[in-house]
Length: 226
Image (cartoon, rainbow, N blue to C red):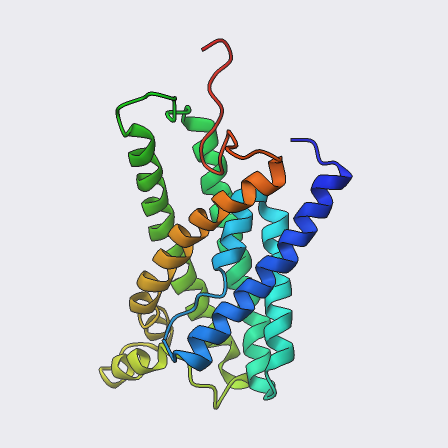
């Protein structure tokens, strides 16, 4: 779809709202509920589904900037600054998966269709995306943690409980960094991917000026002449 000033303005508005949503959700989970989850990319993923990679990356950067301004300790600022790379990686993964889906599937949401093939296809797509995102974020987060360790000493992250247990059994540091993230990322990536897709369904009508838009974020239009 060709961009126009109105659509660009809407995307900018969505980027700001998405970054604010990420920040508020992260604050709620981290400081109010004290849950060991990283949910500060849910709205980033939603905007990537709805509008593509550039708005997603912009949202990731804005979210990290907001968190950077909130934190007072330098190691927290360094941590936030570096882990924006994980958010950007997730945006790229979501975009690539979504792009591939659009190229390889036809629209199965036909009015009156009795078979739930469209729903099943979307669920399988999201499950595959969730698994890849979980592994990718665990690996990239583990590498960043290893490289940033000297600058972030004193910062305790939720996965450190698992990491210390692994280190006691002689697990190499990089492997411990990666493996300790998997239990947490299994939960938070599931919420982020499926929740992000659900939220994107609300953003698409705003972008397209339609009450029931077709296509939706991961459903391509029906072939011409069908």
